[in-house]
Structure formats: C-alpha cells, structure tokens
Image (tube, rainbow, N blue to C red):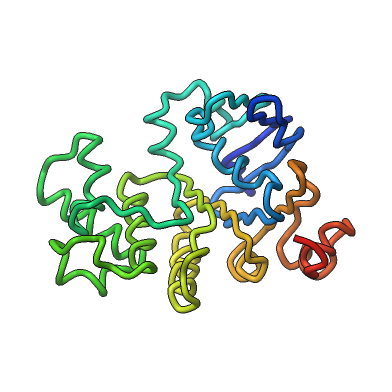
Length: 250
C-alpha cells in the first residue's frame, strides 16, 4: 500500500494582495520523485517553499489551507524540527565558505554532534549518497568554493542529507549546470529514491520525464493536472498541459 508522506488540502498562498496559489490539493507519496512543471509565475516554486515554511521569510506572505507531514500539520512543528525533516536544494549551489568536510558537517554540528569519528562517518556517508565521495575523498580539507558548479550542487545535496531528512525539495537544481553535471545530479536523485521522498521543481520538461514517477502541471497558481509521468507526457487530459509540454507556450 502506498503511504502518503505530504498532503496539501485547499492550499492557497498570497504575497500581499496577490494570490499566487489557488485551492491546491496534492498527495505526495513516500519514496517517490514528484516533479512540478509549469511556466514562470505558475506557482510551482511557491508551492515548494511553503512545504518547509520558507514562505515565512517573505514579508506579507499568507498561507491558508492545510499542509500535512505524516498526517501532522507542519505549523504545529517547530521550524528547526520541520526543516530537519524537509531539506531543500536551491537553483544556485550555495556552499559555505568552508572546507568540503565542514560544509557537510555543518548541519550535524548545529544539531549537537561533536564527536569527530561520528562526524567523519556522516560526512563520508553523505558524500557517497550524493555521488561525490570518489571525486573529493582525498581533498576534504580543500575549500568547497573551488569545486565545479556540478560538484558544488552535489555538495549541497550532501549537506542536506547529513541531517537525515525524510523529504528533499529541489528548486530547479540543474538550471545552471552543463549536461554532464545535470546527468550526475539526476542519477543521484534516482539513487536516493529508495530512502527519501523527493519533490523536483524544474523548467526542463525532459528532466521531469527522465526522473519522476509522477508530474504535476501548474499554471497561474492552479494545479491543472497531476498524473503518472508517462501518462502526462503521452496523453495529457487537459489541452493546456499538452500545449505546454508541446512548447506552444511557456
């Protein structure tokens, strides 16, 4: 039986007087990769950010409806607890101005882990899971900023994994990467699927087709269609979905 990891019910989002999301109901299944596609200003990134309450940081933002994590309202969880359970990887890799090791160890240290052996184990495990270990294992003391863009993005994934989240959110994680680096990030996502629930916002419909089991199409703040990816891309039910996938707009 498929377990629902995240649910939104009648989700509405405003920035000031502008409503950017309208009555969105979505079930996200445990251990799936769910992609969200749509043109600019369709609401997909706003949807992503509200799942770990990053919208709280935006002045005059307002969220109505329910967001449930394992059937519990996320607004009844502390922010630190929520963001430990739901991590996020952004479009531009943002390594800290520290060594590769210290980037990955940063989160565990913030959560009170000080034992050097334990930290080393976490760093190695996280870098292996993010498909970066073999490339950096001999230079963990080097500055993270010296890594390539693709390596920096996988380092950010490792940093997210180090605090052992249950859900990973990706906001266009490959938008600034070359095809080879993009392929490595996508392969990392596929390898993580057995242990994590993942939600990917992407402007690359081919990427959604490559990595996700299901895909949601957003348009002007509305969820137009949510189907298994193969179904959505070959026989969408809504003409607007077909027009977007076919490149007629967007």
